[in-house]
Image: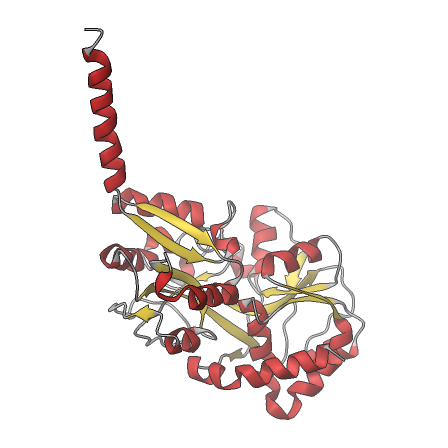
Length: 331
């Protein structure tokens, strides 16, 4: 018996090891805040693994624009099956790099405020960019022109690494066009305290009191209200309208587990995923009705005008808008 017991134990260990080795792994590249302990990642992982018989693994890659840069750099060597967190301003660049494969899904169940028809990407949430501030701020600017003429300090994100930073470029470009975008940025230059690589760093500096306002979303005050029971934060409504961000997911052309990746895409627009979004990513879900939003979202500002470029339109203006921004902030 002293000899057979270790043999039995060794056999069981081998069987368990073989079973673990057979568990398929789905690798999802996403941005830092999505995969963080306080982001949607942990709840999404738990819910999907209950139905997929797989190991869902998130890889955080920085902010959204950095995510695309990493995928381009890795190319066919990438371990990613899914990319989660690009937006409409980056879709054309991902398509041009031939990174994706068609999702084959029906978009009729989406609750986006815009029509959606893209063969490679499906939305999982959306929101409006806005400058967030404390209610105690006096003389709050309500346009880029008023902001540029004021002494109000702001923290923004780098458009080369961050989707909010790129969204701000698109916002100014859409609102003022080629004729006045440079003038607006030159006026804003002395309001900018610093430019951070991503959203998390910028919002942290704002909370630490380093600036009066931070580029974020109209939905950001919902976090303070719901999670912290703090109603002292709000977003400034801008008369030009607010630029919209639609965040998307897609299947990599080189995915090792395309069937599992397809299952994740369908899960992404299901209630189990969508119901996590409002109180973890603090954005509007892309496939839930408005009456499913938690209390507190009804207190948020509602832009009178929505601004958004098509994916091809954003690609056409991106380089010129970036050059305008760099020139203004380097003066």
